[in-house]
Length: 369
Ligand SMILES: Cc1ncc(C[n+]2csc(CCOP(=O)(O)OP(=O)(O)O)c2C)c(N)n1
Ligand SMILES: [Mg+2]
Image (cartoon, rainbow, N blue to C red; front, side):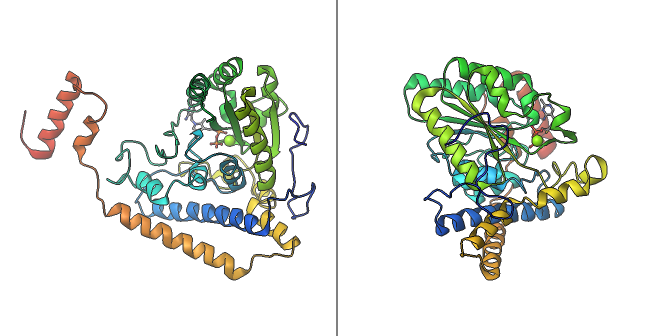
């Protein structure tokens, strides 16, 4: 039985791989291997993207290392390309696990012609129309009210889609967050709110920005269930998110899930030295001991189905090849022309933009007017 408002996070697998609840039938060794491979691919994606940054080929990146079970587990609880997802910036793993091709993500990071938005968003602000994966906005919690609106539309249109909106722990202290949750709750809209609580909002620990016991309990104030789950245990994340998504899909209104996890890397490449300024190496090491990937490896080992060193190395090598090929393919499409910044918004360009276009044209071509 999955209950809301538990004092401790719901968990199926301990960090050392021991089961704390019976493993539901669907987690066959093959299924667990697929989940493991997806998480390991995501971890390597972070490593490759940091290299791209260092090579000067992209300019912004926010790692999800340590949070793979939360994002892959959530993705596996949804109907890809059916449910609507309002992600936040750290959700590239959620996108990948839903099926957004690596080539599309990389095109966005590199701002090439193959990018759907053709370089008009800052790197790491991906989207995919095909997967109903809405464009990231960096303004914290700004996605929450529109997600409530998207869920209300789904209710009025009578579809069986649901809306899922994700955010960090810091976002739950923003006014937008409370407005959005309240709006969805009072309208009984099919909205699943998922908090990826990695315990830090850049340099501020969650205990310094909220007085409530945890995030899940905030649901109580809005009259909806709040589930508290171990976000580094992929089985627990899938079980709880599937349960909450079904509850939402059945017309009961919204639910909130808090996945307790940890960001083991820096906040972004603009914060490269976290351990020096606001947290200790000991804290990071403690959480590395609860890593979601080693946890599923320990579980498989305990089930007598260990992942071999070779199998692991093959997954990593395949991911590196895939990223390298996608980067070259994206870069081969070239950089977007400067003119596109004036397209796709207005049918008639307003005067101030006409002037700017003329100014830029003169700069680029040396021809005035
Ligand atoms: C409205 C707003 N205020 C401040 C910022 C600066 N900022 C960027 S990320 C961030 C921390 C967000 O933390 P959290 O919601 O926990 O997500 P995490 O980055 O930890 O995944 C802040 C304060 C912003 N982008 N938008
Ligand atoms: Mg956070």
